[in-house]
Image 1 (tube, helix red, strand yellow):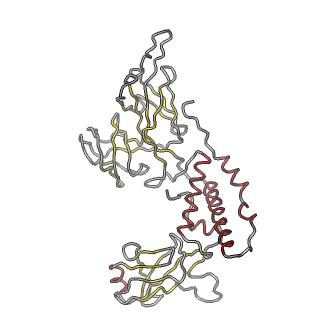
Image 2 (spheres, rainbow, N blue to C red):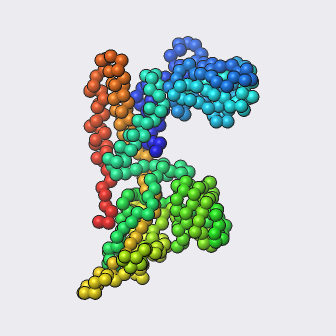
Image 3 (spheres, rainbow, N blue to C red):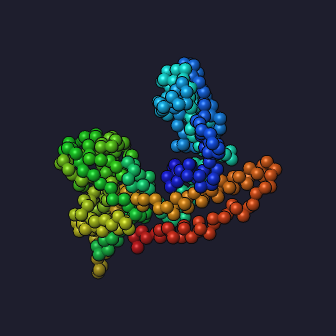
Amino acid sequence: MTATYATVKELAQFMNIEGVIPGRKGVGSDRIKETIGTGDASTTRFFTDNAFVISDTYSLVYGATEAAATSALTETTHYTMNKDDGIVTLTGAGVTLISTNIIYGAYSYCNIGITDTQLQAALDRAEVYIDEMTNNHWATGTDATPNYNQVTDEKHDGKGKYDRDYYTDKYPLPNVSTLVNGAITADDGTIIVDSTTGFPSSGYLTIETDKIAYTGKTTTTFTGCTSVSAHDDNSTVYGHVIEISGTGSGTSPTWTILKINEDYDIDYKTGRIHVMRDDLILNSIYTTYPPLRVPNRLRFNYQWGNETIPADIKQLCLMIATRDILHMAVRMAHGAGRNDFSPDLVNVDEDWIKETIKNYTNHMSSNV
């Protein structure tokens, strides 16, 4: 998992370990881009003056002079960047485009010799740690495919006729839905909708009482769909599936997909699911009074996570990743035989970290 709570650039700036090209220290002189190399219609490999380039900070342009270099090169189409080593490799299209012009670059780099890969790994570990310690997760709900966590076939035991409330093991659940754009024919492999924003890149959908698996999506279609029945235009598509089994104990379950607002209702904030169906509630094998009438099984497919990333969570991720990087710096100093560091600095944010984790912790409430 690639961390989304904070970026490598934000971490470098937070730790004040970001060097920049063009430099900011020139006095009374123009701050010029770096000359990365001159094309000759065949050379593909060039080097930045500084390795340890930071993600999402670099841009390359080309021209006969820096003043004339107003045309940008597009990553992947014209070049690839090995950020850790500062290597620019032109594609065939890039070689042709540049011809004999000069390549100029602007970028940020880590000025203490830690690679972009190492900084990203520290952020990834920090995000996992935060989620584990808080039993919580955050995403940006406005993204086309938010970084929610996905749960498949989470099983729950029945609780009887009079206790109809069930709770997903994780919460909150994002309220994700869209409308069908054009009638669906049975066995269609592609479903056209108004928008797929908020849905995972693959998973399950509910349309009325159909559970539909899909393997991919575009901005307005779900692709690789299976188990599709016919549905009318403007039918609502939901990003979660609630199923109940009405088969007896000791037999393979047959699952019935429940329809929202008719067979169940849902509280997205708490993950509470209230089952309304009476016909799938079974009598217990015990016939003594009172009858237990326990539904056999339920299972849920859903995404979970908060729909925004609070500033405190971003700060927390940066502090935990910084602690990780400082440990790395201490090890580097030991390896080089240097002792010019203060061990107390490694845990300088520890109290704030603990307090923030406590404030954002979700307590397990599944089926209580």
